[in-house]
Image 1: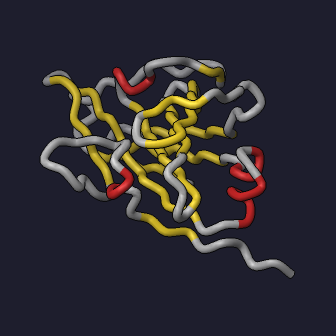
Image 2: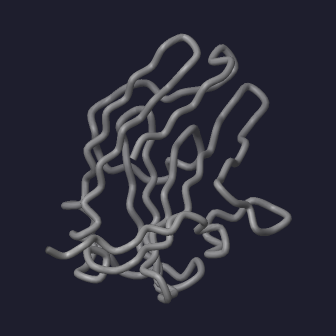
Length: 151
């Protein structure tokens, strides 16, 4: 997937580029996120991707209920391109490594971003179903991906 951010970059705070690695609490600064659930299941995974190349992956058995998960082998491929007024981040995630179901089932996906500016954080998503931003709310998993065709 490709995330694109455009605007007045003199006000947007971006983390410095670095080596791709796992890092916690990326959501405290500018980052892009994806929430992925198998259709009809309450469990989901949260991916965070920072323009620095850092990433995080969390598992949940239900709404904000952390589930045990080993993410060391799940590192995505991240490529970042930046100009004076635009940032693009290509991310390749191997969902099949999460489970067989992720490789074969329809998926619900919530795409979101946390943008840090001089004024603080703002929260962006395909859909904010509640009065306040809550990326974990499954009603915000607005993108439906059909299962891959088997051939």
